[in-house]
Picture 1 (cartoon, one colour):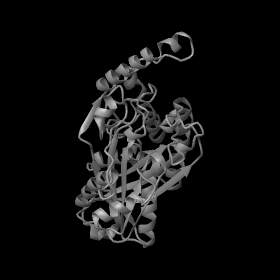
Picture 2 (picture 1 turned 60 degrees about the vertical axis):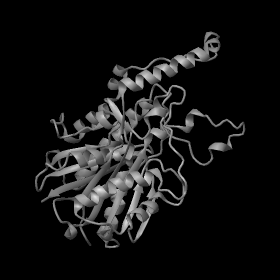
Picture 3 (picture 1 turned 135 degrees about the vertical axis):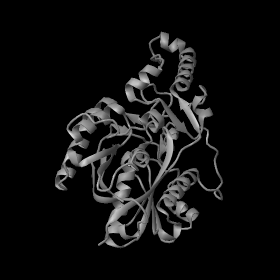
Length: 374
């Protein structure tokens, strides 16, 4: 048996940013166009008029101030309202693989390793741009890694579930190391025309290198324990799969083909699920709240994170104990907790413990207890 450790992380961040002010201006222009085009039906009570959004509403509802995206122009065009992504030929690297490649190379560089040191690639993300061949195998090819690769999807918990899978394989001795990559093009599955969610997501890719402890060449985080759980719910859903075109009347523009969420039910049901999961995970490993120097949570909503932080620590977290990146990146699905971990972990001291936790559609929740060494 070997001890699995995290030796490197990397983040790919798009170079285009949409501020709340830009997003609101675009959305409100779309609303005005819609209401004008449907004025007669609205007057007759057949169609409900759409209402404007505002910067104050977005910040209060989520804590988000801006987001990085792959394509800004399409999202902000009131007559388009979605990213305009060029369709690539089969001979070109896919967009997700290209994003993951950047993050993976940064993780390898931080760990002082090369592709020759890696045996497996897990591409864990909430949406994959194709069914097959696996995006993970394409990433493996681009990195020139010998071994194997596979895709997995547990929505916003994909990264922590991927870390558990990789850690288990390293621990058993079946592999020396694995890259868990999380390319998230969330802008492509968000319904930008829906006031209740048009501000939620951004695009990013993260990568985490997991190795045997004896292979570490610098400071690292020992993976002390992992735990995953799922519970079926329809309260967060995206029906855009290969059956999309099978609707008998031929209408493809269905609202349920993009991100949908019953926010109040999610808030009510997910918070106790996550809090109880983490509490049990900690208790079973003899970890108490005072042992945790930092918690890196899924970046979905500031109010949710604040609630979970209080539950985990038994008090209001001190500044820095529960870092948020939500205000800058928005919700980046599986990548959010890894962004927080990557950006806010270097300052921990030898022996310090922390907890990585993600949660989301499924429902799903994954937690990873780590300890700094070196």
